[in-house]
Length: 46
Image (cartoon, rainbow, N blue to C red):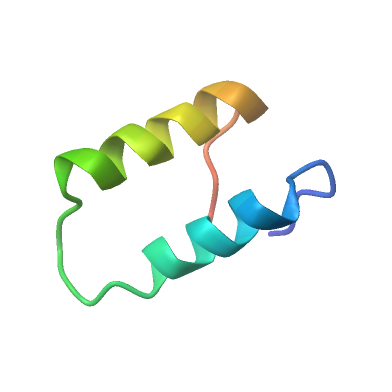
């Protein structure tokens, strides 16, 4: 799902998170994802 209001830099970073080949997020990755969800007020499907 695309989000038209998502800035290109944020979209690129979230796309990279989606390409990580492990079953968990690091603390930094989790913090970043949580901030993006809060900013755009919805869960993001990467």
